[in-house]
Picture 1: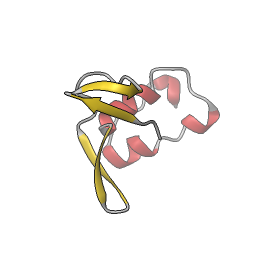
Picture 2: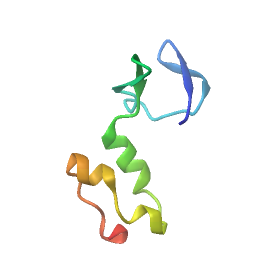
Picture 3: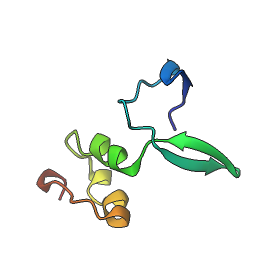
Picture 4: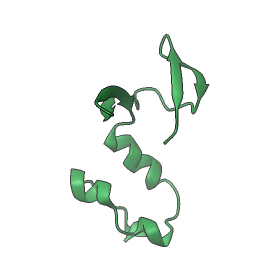
Length: 72
């Protein structure tokens, strides 16, 4: 989990996520919270050479993303 607090759409503190990436909504104990969209999580995860734990990708399975050849 990475936390960020936004002030007028700009990070006041925390991780500086790319514009447009905090477009999904999740829930923590029933409370809606903005979160990183699955498409962005997949981009972040496939932007570097994979570790063994990255070779099976639940995001790809769940959302139908195409896994890059380097990750198979």
